[in-house]
Image 1 (cartoon, rainbow, N blue to C red):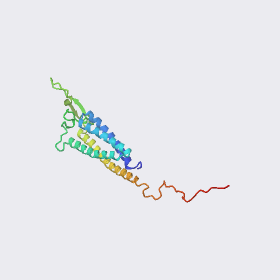
Image 2: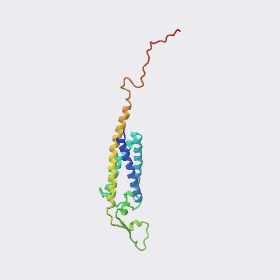
Image 3: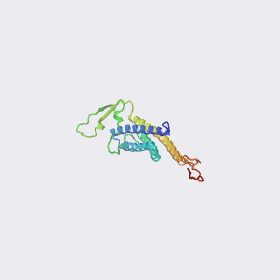
Image 4: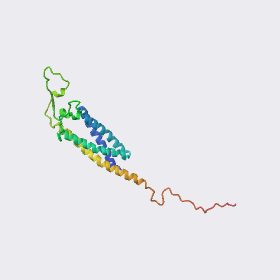
Length: 207
């Protein structure tokens, strides 16, 4: 398969997925979103596995990547439903932090145009949850839509990766099968050497 084949396209898609996953992982770490952090970590490992399988012609690794691509699409659909409050889900819940903390998406306070203002605490109340005393105003785009755009991009790239991974697995499998028949139908293989007739005998020479 040449450089313009589906294999090279899949390598590009896997590389793009790695960059997008690392970017998303950074912001999920900043927002203490533990469930997405774990999902991104597994995603990065399997994309690397798929990238290795594509470069080294390992169809089994690419099959693992293909299965994960379908699961990754389902996960990002769940994230979209979570931030759009679909199906009984609520973006204000602590589901993505495993109910460990009350943190939300990093974009909720640092979105484009957002202005953060710390509200004064009531007298006599001391708490380490300073997050509850921060007011955010002037955001050009609500944070849930930023998260939806992130997940939508992940879904689009994952679907492309799924399609090209299926194509590459099929191409590699067909190529491996064709190797089993090399020389099988050739009546005169390359390694055939014409033998001299056995009836030719060496006769002594007399000077």
